[in-house]
Length: 199
Image (cartoon, rainbow, N blue to C red):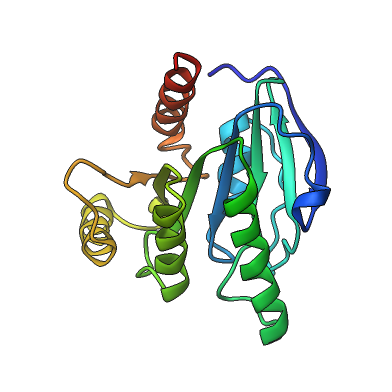
């Protein structure tokens, strides 16, 4: 997809604060410090559309963006690593689940995993939510530039085994440094959006 525009719309916590559901929405979610903002920025060709941070857990709101005035990207709060209170972690879980449960124009979730780390209980819980609410999702394995090709392939096999991924679903390798995977991710998104438009 050729990106002609990418703009921040608003931040929200609960459904009443979300922007109008007028276009298909793709949400990005993963553990804190997994490279979520870098992935979003790379996909739209902007350096600072989504704010990156060296401090895990900095994104504590749901951030909405519009791309090409045709599709909405949603940056969901990271989970897992942040040094925050249990109450705040519980609130984040409730915030994410409320979004997944209530957002009628949500068409796909990009579930982001660091290729160097095994999926956590939080990752597996999120995957279970997506299955329960029948939301299509795509696994993206970030930071592959930090491993050799063989190491990355071996890590993907391990992650697939933990996730119990079916043979026809291959998580996509991604690197914000080399832009590896950018085109492949857009191919999946474009195909999914076109299939919805044809319904």
